[in-house]
Length: 282
Length: 301
Image (cartoon, rainbow over all chains, first blue to last red):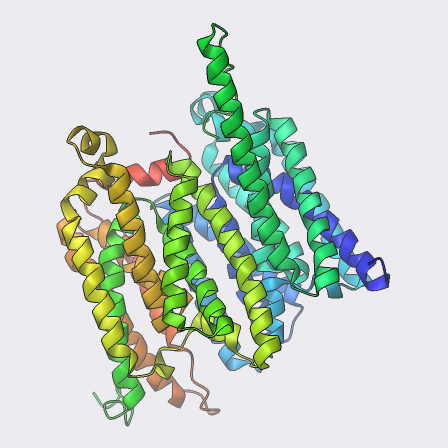
């Protein structure tokens, strides 16, 4: 389980889980799940395009995820954000289909871009992931307070002079950055799952933002570690375990919250004040 | 005409099937799409295509009818999304994401098992992008039949659906069971999307669901007009796309054509962009059109 090729998988899985946990926390807070799905899936088309013209797939991924982020942010100012996201996604996938039809890309290459090839990560692939991951974490750290404020209380944020549209663009660019680094190693679908499941579960456990963010990273790590171990033993795809464990954590989180609310209402009836949820709207 | 239609266009069997199935899918998708876009459920609409895909790959593995897999998974997925996050619009987004994440995980497993079991290649690409030109003509009656049922259900719940989409509170006060209407609509959406993704692929299915509807809602003044304009846009884009894709076989010396989904999606996308030009936008903005968009952006309405 800890043979040489697995060491890289453990390392890269952990890095991805940490970045996804931190960025994903804001994806959930801001309800940007669709964008978090659209950017990696669309970016996959960029890799196909880069392959066709014979450049580094990372460049194609970067260009496409940035284009997606900026396109979604710009177009949704004048239209419905979710419809615009859907259209941007299908447009990029259609471009991907066009690229694939012109190239001689072999089927497994497509499969690995969608579902990842985490078990075959070389040491050389580690560095771009670490670098871009660090950029994402630093960016979220710097923007932590304004991001949180515009997510929870847009009116207060606007009153304080923050500009939600500009923050949305910056956040989507961070999302694009996280996507670029992770798609080649964990696949477009897996990164989305890691950005939604663990943070959504974490928010059920705690109403306090820093705690929820920490929990989100922790749950993400447990998910990816468990998935890697199971995938190693059973030889089934890592993506299957990540998807199942994320969903399971979310179900546990929801049950926990339902149980605590039942307790809270009992206490409220007996005279105590029900604790005000800081993250109302969870 | 000779320059538009390359030789053999009208006598080609696959073209006949593509034109028929494409038009039917475009029509149904556009009708369902208008409500989907209006209710702010584009994400669910897209996610259901992926969930249906999981069903398709599962059916392939367990050796039962792919159609059953597509529809079954779609209905299950819609039920799960509804179960987890109906309370409020924002929670629904996350619920959709979690269900989608789980479904794609399952799809990864099924595709892996399919590949090891049958040593077939091209499955994931086929499922994702589909191909309107490789359809079997025997699917036509099935697609048409299911489409009629979908439209029938939609017509049946038209008024309560409309009211509960615009104002759930008002609908509730009038005795409409908003939750039930919502579930019925999700099921209709699941069937429509599952059907069109088996026929034309997951990508094209989303494009035909959201694109024409979003464009129509932008250029028309009311919902009824949008319900007329959206299907027209969808069918026109589909047919033009089929023609262009057929012609594209003659464009390159390698006679390697471009996929039909590429043309249809590009036409739909361009249509949406053009509809955003100031001259074409309708003057009055109704609350119908703006409410879901504002809620989606996370701004409490």
